[in-house]
Image (cartoon, rainbow, N blue to C red; front, side):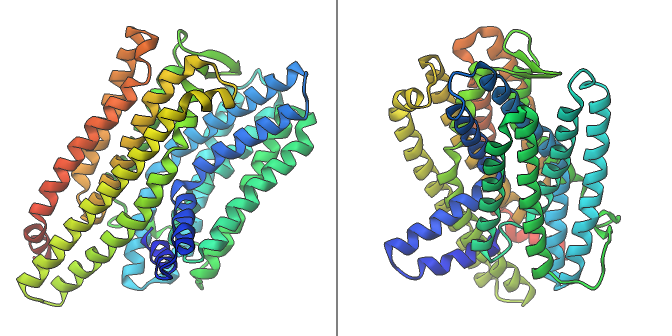
Amino acid sequence: MAGIGFELRHLLKQDTYLGAMRAYGYAALIGSGPWVISILAVMALGMLSVASHEGASWTADYITQFSVSVTWLIAASLILTGPFQLIFTRYVSDRLYEGNDGAIVPNMLGLMTLITLLSGGVGLALALTSFAETPWAYRVMMLMSFVLLSNVWAVAVFVAGLKAYRQVLMAFLLGYLTMIGLGLLLKGFGREGLLAAFAIGQAVLLFYLLGRVCRDYASDKAWDRDFLRWGRFKPRLFMIGLLYNLGVWVDKLAFWLSDITSVQVIGPLRAAPLHDLPLFVAYLSIIPGMAIFLMRIETDFAEGCREFDRSIRAGRSLEEIEGWRLSMLSSVRRGILDIFKVQGVTVVLLLLAGPSLMQLLGFSSWYLPLFNVFLIGVAFQVLFMAVLNVLFYLDRLSPALWLCLAFVILNLGLTLLSQQLGTQYYGYGYAVSTLLVTLAGFQQLDRAFRDLTYMTFMRQR
């Protein structure tokens, strides 16, 4: 992700408030990822559909079914593709380091083929079994959306690496405006019409980004699967991708699959309204922290990491190498402190504005305690992502793997405990688990930086 961060820093060099606002604005939108923008677009489409059909009770029903369907699509597609995203990110990084840009697009198409087969196979099996009692049009739209969304996550690996950040934002804008516009036109077809609009919007986003990647990384070869070859494939990265995404969603799944906390919406899909609504609103608070994450951790630290590596390969003095190690450590500490401050201010402001925000969105005051807890949990999740990212740069995959495993176990265990304790404890499983793994991650970072020079030289042998 550092590629686009370096480009955005040119805006900061303008030394103007407008330049700084533009840089951090772009970083916030790109760093937050398409899944946050998906939440905003789905919420906007739902609100517009309700506003255009006032008094129609069926409208609320199909919008609820559409929103729950998209939420499950996002969760399932991220869990399915998460392992391959990290595998491929590492593969692309290694090929760029070697200067072998021509291997990227063929292997990306190979990855998309694999993901299409996996998501299509899983989706078709579910459509014929678990969703057998739902209308065929609904099943077709769900299958199409699942395959397209899974491929969006694969191409999204390149989003922050493409230096044409305006075109990247244009892709998101075009894709989600298409979804909203078509959704308003097709809303008369009910949930199937909205799902069709969602699928077409994802297709527009996917093929726009795909075109950008193919143009930036030209190749004479059409297709390859070199990223799966023995030696290229990193089993620990595969497991980290699986466990991290499972950890993010496991508390939601626990609430959705419990008969006590959830309701059946359509087919096998369930939702926990008391839990889900404040959670997804709270997730929007991730945007400021992700902007700092992209501009500071992904840029300042990445530059120091590159110079540290160059110093060792060039046979520089130990004093100079240690200087770059300390520079890396300092940039990480500054970046994490900046994330903590910005996300902390965001949390405090939203805690104060919580009652008004709930009223504005038309939510009951019952949601407010959960919203407050989720805000804190989301803030720690941003810090946890920063910790994992630094561990990836330092090639400390084993600590990252154990942290993600701990995240899954703690989040699931504490969430199940909170369900037994009662509604006043809902959300604490997620918040406490993100706090604990973040603190453990800080400890791992201290250990990694302390031994960095020694371990780097030992790996050169």
